[in-house]
Length: 351
Image (cartoon, rainbow, N blue to C red; front, side, top):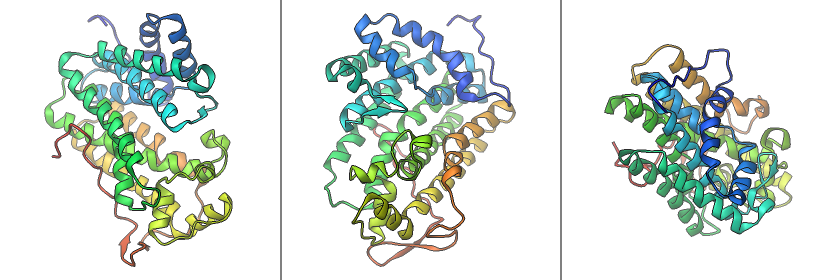
């Protein structure tokens, strides 16, 4: 990007991911065009359903403290890194679909999907400066650490804190990195960058809580996956672990297990965690000291990718209500309004 390139920030009525796609996709595809044809076919297939949220976080974080255009290369790098992580995630979990289309490994095979993921990683690092490499590398190491820790969890592990640590490592690191690097590219102070990093961490973990709720109760229209999909595959997601920790007996059909999880408060707990993590994220955004359209767009994006996605599946009658208690399997209680703090990611020193 030259000094004359201009990235116009989205207007309040615009859809932020659509704006970001319009800004980021041309340089992203220009980078992908340098790849060999067989690798490029895999990436093009995967790009079809990409939501560009990670790069949107980078651009809006930059716009909040300076100018989005100064973070365009960072946004492209983060989107390339995100594509790399998604390809590997689908391979690791053997997920057969990504969004509403077959996963890349299903369409092209393991070897081509793996090759494409590695090529994307190389492209990502080629788009960041030497100073930015360390931060991006730490974020990706955190994701890898999350998968390793997830593998090491025993089948009977129901400790909520352990599963939250895995979720934070896998899902909070890249959003945090995007916000931090986007802000620094635009000239943010270290304090502003730290608050925006925390904003991204909390948004990433809140989004994971919502993803896990939608994977059970959202159905194909909301999640692109069958109803009760995680239960059908015996996955220990956050609402499942929360319900088990509360003493739920998860036997029977997936539908029966889903009812038991709801009755034990697992679903409500995840929804409240998402609410509280979003509130913490917005508090960090306020502490950046920025105001105006860009800050509001960033707040709106955070809401859109977290609690607003839960709105269609929420019900007035849920196992727990605000102000009640969440009972653990050990007989202790804790308020459902208490959020579990985000764990520091690999390479990050807790503040």
